[in-house]
Image (cartoon, rainbow, N blue to C red; front, side, top):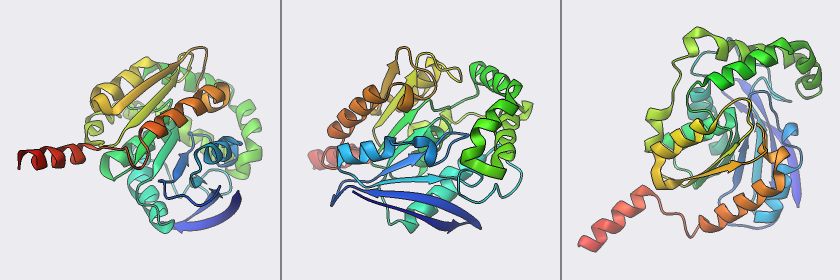
Length: 274
């Protein structure tokens, strides 16, 4: 297995990237999208393990303001997730010569994965604890985190260094801003044309089954819901074996020779009519 770390300049920001190559493979690569306070390092060994089990190239990167990437470029706006999905991620994938990624996103990263797939082609999407609308459970969880701000910042400092306070405040204050209450990506989700595995811990302090149900309602049969009992907000740490098993099963069902998008079905329907 080969591993490399490098930086890519995207929209005036330096993005730190981890690339894992277990061996030659023509299968669509895995692209890991971390949570609101995450980074490459906070995935721990999960990308390596899934790359090895699937035999696929894997990419993990830290967004601006996170990990070893450059600081946040300015004040965070309410559309920050849309910008990550529609501006930064496409530019990064182009720089890495990736056309049809398998996006694996946690929390904010799961939302970014859904937003990307709603506008650009993807082979498949796996989300953990993704948000598609503002839920009271998420706001309550953030309020509790804000009450423990000093303690949480202390724990995160080893990952984000001097950027930690700005990162935490950008996350908490954006979501708790009354102007953010109307944030809702559900109208965009029916545009997704690839299969998706939608994962949620039943004990998640930042979201409920309503998020999974909303995504499933919007995507229909393309979405496979997975609720994990006894699991909180971080399934890849709290239920790693279960998640690895389910992702391997999902990728096996929807591998490069098995993925059928809505466009494929329309083309096949026309061909049969002819």
